[in-house]
Length: 112
Length: 115
Image (cartoon, rainbow over all chains, first blue to last red; front, side, top):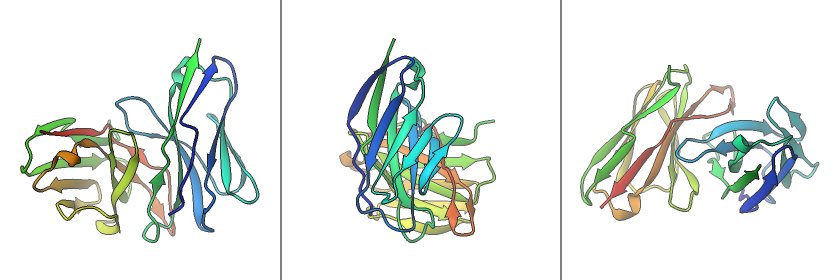
C-alpha cells in the first residue's frame, strides 16, 4: 500500500495561502491522490482529487509533480472555518485491487 | 435529506457483547465503505461493498461482519466486543463507474465505547 507522510500540524492566519504537502514515495501507476477535510466530530469531506499535474476547483488546488511522489494541497486565503484536519489519501480507484489508506492527517489551525 | 446516515451515533457497551451499526445512503451510490478511526485519528478502511458484493476486506478480525441487504445499506455487526474496538466508525459511499470510484461521502460517525 502506498504510505503517505504529512506534517502533523500547521499554523496560519486568516487571508493567507496555505500549502500542505504529502509525500507518497511508493505511489503506484494506478493510484490517484485525494484530499479530505475533517472537522471535529464529523466525517471527512472530499476536497479535491487528481492524478498528475494540476487540478483546481472552487475550494482548492492540487499540485502533483511529474514523478508523483508528492502532492501539495493549496488553500487560497484561508479563513477561521478552514481550521480542520486535512488528509492525503492515495489509492487505486479501481477498488478491489488496492485498499484506500488515509495518511495521519495535518491539523491546520487558522488564527485571526 | 441526509446523504449518509448512521445509527446509533453513540454506542456504549460492555466487553463480550454483540452490537450492530447501521448505515444508509440516499445518494444512489453503488459502493459503500466502513472505516475505523482510532484515538490517534488514523482513518483505516475495513470493508467496501460494490452492488452488495464485498470488494475490499482488510485485515479485520472475523468478529467484524459487514452485511449489505441492498445497495443503499451497509451494516456492521461486531461480535464479542473488546476494549480495542473502541473507536469512531464511519460509513461512506461513492459512485463506481467502470474501473473508477469517485469521491466518497461520509456519514457522521458512530462512537463506540467498550467498557
